[in-house]
Amino acid sequence: MKLSIIVPVYNMAADRKLEYCLDSLVGQTLADYEIIAVDDCSTDESWKILQDYEKRYPEKFRVAHLEENRHQGGAKNAGLKMAQGEWIGFIDSDDWIAPDMYERLIGRAQETGADLVGCDYCLTCEHSMKVGQVVHNNRQSQTGVLDDEKKRSLILDGGSLVVKIFRRSMILENGLWFPEHIFYEDNALGNSYLVLAKHFEYIEEPLYYYYQHESSTVHTISEKRCEDRLEAGRLMLREAERHDFLDRYRPEMEYSFTLLFYINTLFTYMAGVKRTRYRFVKELGREMRCRFPQFQDNPYYRERTHEEEKKLIRMQMKSTFLFMAYYKLLWAYRNFRKRHSRSGLSR
Image (cartoon, rainbow, N blue to C red; front, side, top):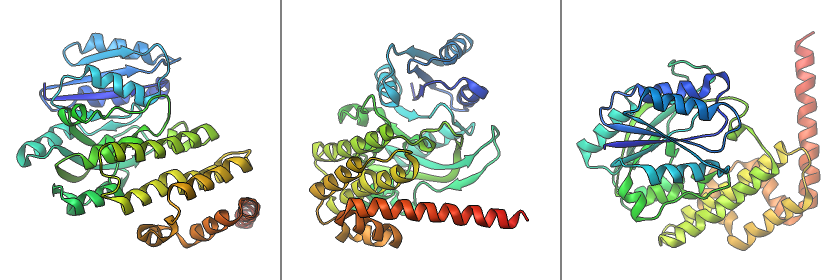
């Protein structure tokens, strides 16, 4: 078996989202592959849809049903245990791919001897093969045999796992099992999936369609999801320690952790959670200081972080109370200006 495509599924039956994804998978031009769709205890018609596809495409479609909701990490792990392919690909069940995506990725691997191959994706809000806004996941300078410089670059700008294929032997030999029962499982394992590879290749074309809709994980903000992001950051560091690359790439890991654990969580929490809690924000800052006391001196932080964010972070590091009060006033003022400008335009 050349490739196993693992699809975690949870409540994707509405608007034919799941079927559009699965149709793009059964229509792949690659000759030798299997689709492993794992239903994560869905409460809609997703499981019935998967069973129907298994009946229609028995030669390439395998399904499994989890008795408890284990989130995408648990579904991916179940799929990995079932997989027989030399290569592994992951896809989110509300997205879809070009007909020749996997044939081209595996073809590039065979041509070059790579054990990791990726491509770009595009953002789209309609079910079609029309290419939307292209997001470049990687750079050609990151390709080839992975030395320290290229691995540092991949930690900083590794791109999404769903647009890549991985040798199954690399995953199993290194025990790269995803955390379960939390969101952001890719963030926890992403660096390990990239740094432990030996040779990376990249096709600079958008072969993956990333569907934008309101129920996407990235569009749904809650305190629970913010807590999951914190746990993903902690797991990311533990994984780096386990595979002995935390100290080797410390500046890159420090910034990667700062961005995931602290910056993204702090600002999405403040902007997206209706009832923000002082204790949550205070503990977030305290743990960040404990993990990396000098994170504001990190060269990547200084270069890549927006000046306004730096100002707010300095404030939060000094006083959580002042930070939260200032942020809420700033947010209210900007919303007022936005509403005022809109009403002015409508006159």
